[in-house]
Amino acid sequence: MATAKLTPLGLAVLELLNERPMHPYEMAQLMRERHVDVRVKVKAGSLYHTVERLQSNGFLEVVETQRDGRRPERTVYGMTAAGRDAFMERGRELLGDLAEEHPAYLSGLAVIDDIGRQPALSELERRLTRLRSAIAADAVVLDQLKHDGTPEIYWLDWRYVSEQRLFELSWTERLLADLRSGRIVFPQEKPRLNLITKDENHDKTG
Image (cartoon, rainbow, N blue to C red; front, side, top):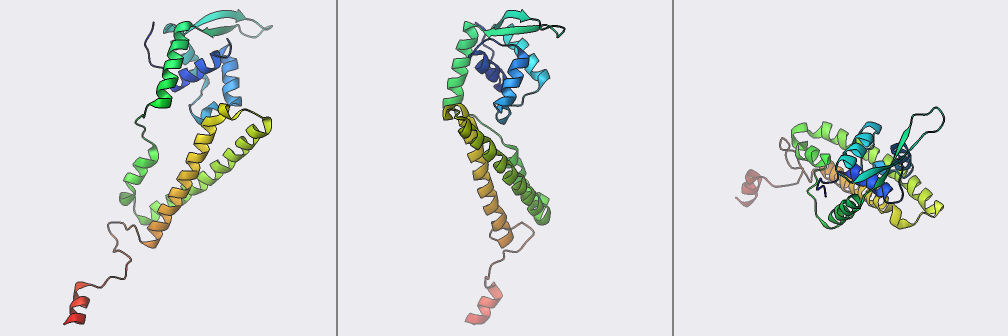
């Protein structure tokens, strides 16, 4: 059995094929409808490349070819036993293992002192605006899923992402407040605290 590790897109393809055989065009449609892009980048070229790689690894096989009028012939793929084993194994790993993830935001926070106060505050404000917009969009999708009666177990990924964005919004708002108040200072700035200098303290005690 092939031992190649599944990419996030490869896992998403096998997730669909675990339901039934289908052709890549149908996979792309379902991924859009189910908002799979919330957890993996989905592009037509990369999807077809992923399907080819899964087939070469023995994780899926051609079930049939379809032709609808003058449209190009479409190849329908199904998951093999090896593909199902790899799918189940990778799914368990992703649920239970603690992966080392490196969000881009962390790199930005690491150089905030180099950027300087005003540019940093402006960029954080811009981030907050985008977060609020994304959170509003999340709410629309989640409301629709609830309205459609889609079982919650099918959109746990959306719950996670939306709540993660809410946390990031709250955390960034607190960071911005701390930077503005002077509780967190930039290296070039003096702390905005009513501290008594050594000279003042000497004058009062002398």
